Length: 411
Image (cartoon, rainbow, N blue to C red; front, side):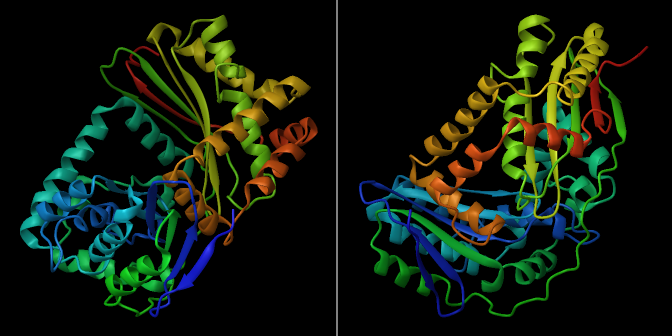
């Protein structure tokens, strides 16, 4: 992979991954804005602003934006996380210039119309209600609260009914101006595009974005709280999440952590799947998944079972975590986990969207392109001794945050 780079006249960086044989093009606009950067009273603002960027600009209303992308036959969407917001579109290569112009319009000329704001407030409140009705979302949100405590990572990305109810056109615009500027944004492109034409389109569509760079906020690094929350509700199952110490994204043991998590709960052959489902029939599914930030991380284990088997499930999960401290991975287990990671990486790069997303993650996490052979080398170099050392360093057998949701009466 060899990226091509360009800097727009306003200072925004553009990165391109050519795919000569592809008919698809994917464009991503990355904004270093996430829920961790929200101040008091702004809970959920980053996510709300992401919605509002689709609700009308100085040249297009909300319906015209939707019709225009459907007319191109492509997909346009966005997401918000704790540290980044991303807007992206995937289209046929011949429509890449048009898609770039549309994305640029959304991110420079949104008007945040008060009427549309009230409509979208209602939509986001429904999204929040839907999340509360979903036990998997709810138990995971509780886990973040008990793991990260009062740190912003412990707050919900969607915000709360109270915070969402306070958003106004002026507060949304102020947040937009603080975070959406060339010093805080970059563009990644993957596909067989007409590079010069697309650069010209992006130059025009981003020409009127504010070039005023707001000083970075002082942020605190997360320290795990390792507390516990049990919430009663009338579900058929008890939903259990365990939060374990993770690693920041640039950490030298990050690859070893991903091999370890894959071995623990990354597939049908994983330790947890075999012990929890295949041998004991305790749950339909069980998984382990790491999530890393620039200065911290968490590894999540989740499973659901009948109330009568809750204690057994908890015991099995903790026993398996402790067993990792004394039973090293066999050569076969290590190879299997490495192959899973490599396959996930390489298969994800078969699409323009996958290549565009990898570029964005590389630049956010490492500040540079990480070539596939380099990542494969990192994976190959992980040893069973590295895994054993990492488990002891992270102290998974003793330090756990626990979130439980379901029919808990009498327990």
